[in-house]
Length: 99
Image (cartoon, rainbow, N blue to C red):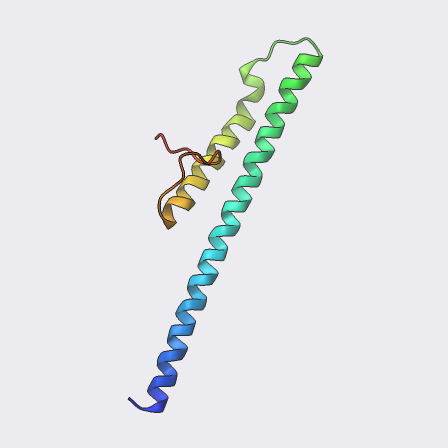
């Protein structure tokens, strides 16, 4: 194997490694964003519940249906992204694993 072939092989290895790292970082970023959206949905549900209690109103499920759907969608997204990497943790509150 010539020196040029060895250098080319090393460059290919490094390039592949960098590509894998970039893909992992992109996936990590998507997971973090989905978790932030879930947290926001939880806060929105909590705010609605607290407001209803303060105002003496009944907590109607229709009031929380939109943030609830956002939370569930986010949890499904996190689960799918993590599952692409391997097994999911059934105790992780950001995941839905009973499907």
